[in-house]
Length: 579
Image (cartoon, rainbow, N blue to C red; front, side):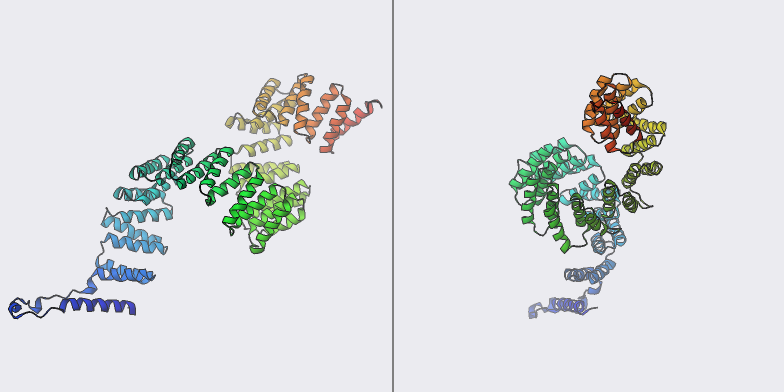
């Protein structure tokens, strides 16, 4: 026993003894009433659980939880069915991360006293920590039944139900909370958040608009929630309005200012957004995340030097912050400083959070500059043999397709589709690669699969329609599908080209020319669209226009021997005055 406990015990024994034996001297008249000393019983303090409980409390208050736990256990040994002691020991064990032992104590407490709410609350917390959310919900629900006036229990239970997507149950919980505490706003906020999580935005909006009628601080918080809802609905103007109101009502509301800055940036109101973040930086000068936002806004405005200066300053204090280094690499890339950007990205090592993203950017960057060896090397670093990320595989497939390595591209797309079989974008790319590689029917089958799942997919409709027309297939079906695609995407240059080519196949060259001229404006650098326009202009005897169209096609794809021959033959046939 340590000195402190020894002193405490000795003190308590002395006090007890003093109390027992400090009897006043009796008067002669009352001596006949003096009890026999043999009838006085001195209690055995070593057998009193209360003594050990007091010792444990004293020790725990000084931070000595180990010794405190020892004395709580001694108290429990003398009173083993105490639900309070079992729960108290369980709480100490939980704080010391001895979850399994804490669970045993909490369960024992509920057996000894099924009406003891604290034990069920502890069980709820322990089940939440272990991921057993079903039992956690049951435990919190039982605790709430026993203690319906406890605010925290409503929050614990309702939040857990919402996280399990038990939205109707969470709604009931928070409605009960509102009934229990009708004059308070907390229940309304939680109920509104449940409606948001469940996608019932109209109900959430109604809840938060009711709260706008309350105190100024409540109104500010309600504006923040409304702004977040409108942001989810992509109503950026409404979101901006509510975040602005929140800032007016509560100028120190960091969340409101942060969201306002972000929604302004989404609307490309970069100057206003920058000003918001600049003011926010004054409120939180040590927040480097705000400085990063400012740098990204400057980059969007193409103020690359200022953006780079901010990012460089951050890296001087935190050189290992790979997220900042990634943004710096992107700024340098946008400046056209390719090899400086490559150097920054290469400082992000494998295993760091931004490694894969850095390799994807590097691969696409060098693909654009036609440095194909580097493009493949970097995408291979991102998509290692154990890669489980379908998106990375898709990007690798796209690069291989660009390099005309179609067999490898198909294999990659198929592997990505094994991971995400319902991914329309990947299936479209597989079908396109199959068609390019000469497997037209297989490509069409992939597109037909897309339409079964998504009948209004404009890209699949256009692919099937154009392929049917190009192969001399069912022109009626081809035109019907392409016109449907054009209704869905009226400004898509590739769909305009498809319809133009189908009309050409039907002999309606005047109408075809109209669509092809619109198409070439939308996709100026596509060699096939330019070739189609040249062919129709030639048919319509507009030779100079045809020459220009063929030259534009060759500018985009100089190796196309067919277009080279068309241009050579046309220029040879033209009279000198026509050239």
